[in-house]
Length: 434
Image (tube, rainbow, N blue to C red):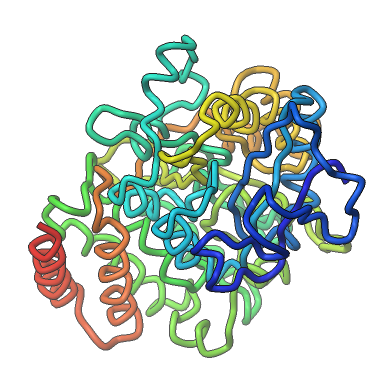
């Protein structure tokens, strides 16, 4: 291993400058027993990078890119500081508040980014981009939609996840029906789900969401062009709630309460029980790596609501430079490598969609997938939407809406009550933040 890795559970004392495996960063070897292998020479700078679940994702996702960066930049070493997924946001905030010398960190998601940005933890990258004439065009709409605050860019997307429609080709073939297309409204998907459910055996549903609130709520935000979760009239979201309730009542979609009670998740698509499922593009990796799947599958572009622009929901994994880093130039080099063309080409080989996309990266992505052209088209060149203008209470408002939505899906609240309660909670959160 060329890099220093700190990847065990981070104790609370980390917040005051301790690493997970030793003392203050840079003052102990922190090599996990390889005390001679990773010692940097006097001319090297060590950058400390915070992320989550290194043990799970590091070897396949991050390690090849970090090694490539270190090979290209022998004056820089990367030290990974990792914590478990469930604890990451809390640990990261504690570290940054306590003045820990983290140089770069991943925000847990684009919805979590506004919270850390509002605490002045993230460096405004716009001056660096302007100084270096860095081209942001290959990142598409994500920079403007999710990483720009008051005119400044505060992160780059390492990965992006377009929400798309996965479908089981074998189920459609057995029903002698055409596959979903790359231009379908949610209303059309609903009718298709009902039709295919009527032509298939019991236990197979025409459509299903992954029954987790975070995987369903984005569909509600797509019911209005230019939706902003802090300012829009929330009554527009009842359209999606009525649509879901109708599918449940018709039997074309498994009831949400039943799915949750059985702890179902997206793996039930892998079991061949759902003809269609709306999910993030990362699921391509799961499907492609699944051995003995037993059926052919495809991807269609995200459905959109009648009367709205043809677009789809997008999330991202932002990477930030700590505003207090002592190694700004080196951190910038790493940021633009891992989130730029070099890192994107490597990431694409893992069947994940990089935040940076050009023709070469796209070819790298396509070369590692066995998908038809229609499915490749579904995963690329998408017009995207998110939850609106990022703000410090972004994630809190989304969380409140998700809880109210779950009450509707379980029959404990009407869509109209959802609007009333959600609007009241939103107003309170915004007022308390001022």
